[in-house]
Image (cartoon, rainbow, N blue to C red; front, side, top):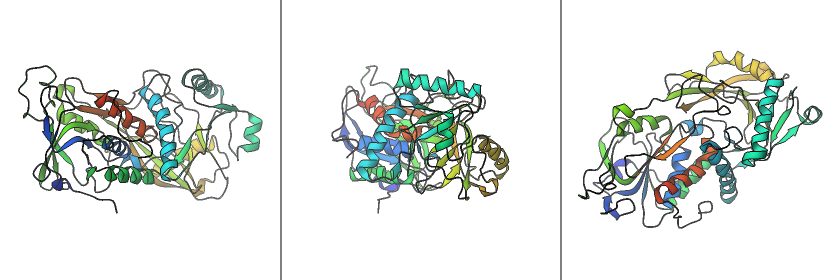
Length: 433
């Protein structure tokens, strides 16, 4: 069984102090841990596992829930995305493509259930066809991701009832993965490397430590140059403990903006917007579909359409749609959205048995912009934020990590490691370790 350690067992009152000097220019920082990663979703787990590979360091993963991966990471389509939607130079494109390759390698190395299903993007009219042509040109000329056109005849012969009046674009490197198996693997690898998981430990406050160096140099006078103090409770309303760390990584997903706002002055506070995605299960035996089917993306939709995905047993499910909500804890699938979903599905799968569709589950996507903002395929869309925060020492901030966050998770972990350590590399192979 994987160890589950509460925050009270790893706080400064009971943990031996570790001396290290990776991030202080003039004096060593004494802290419980070298790295504190906040957020136990797939991205936080990937980062924690990546940092745990470094010698002479220690890492704690702080998660507010009693188990890892209970929010966005476990309430999604479990798709390994190809990286074709996000433009030429965005972080989403770069990290999705790199992350896809790393994820397939990790799945092969550690026996994580997955399958390269491939995906068809289907167009029903000239406008949608034009959108697919833009994606095709991007993949061929800019980002080197394999795609190919599927003609009407091939759709009729191999489409298994799929409608694509204006053609389809195939993405052969798209796949699916057991997200729960992936997260358990990452947690196990992290703990095997000596990492500590603090579950049921909501963060109540964060502050830069005031102890340490008295130097007046610019780098050592920044907040965080003497480390970070993180107050966590034992459960939602339990006793408060303080964990100290040299570096702080905010990978809290739906809670990331709240963590950000704990640290920065009010003038720099951000707001998060919540796009609920409802999923619908399908109990009919026909039609039988062997690949993922996505409608051509449409500007202003807030997502990629109510698409058809498969689980690893081959069962069909549809979703997510986009329902803007104020409460990120609202995870009950909205049955009133079913009729609209059926109408969208019938555009590309006319023979779908509407009576076999029922609401199944829902997930929340953290958005940095409200309804009506640019879609990923538009210019000026909201990209991932993965950065060292200016004006602070040893703080890496991750905001707006929605789709394709799962696919990108291992590449995001690499990027965080590089932000902290530059060109240095860890001491072990990050896929096979």
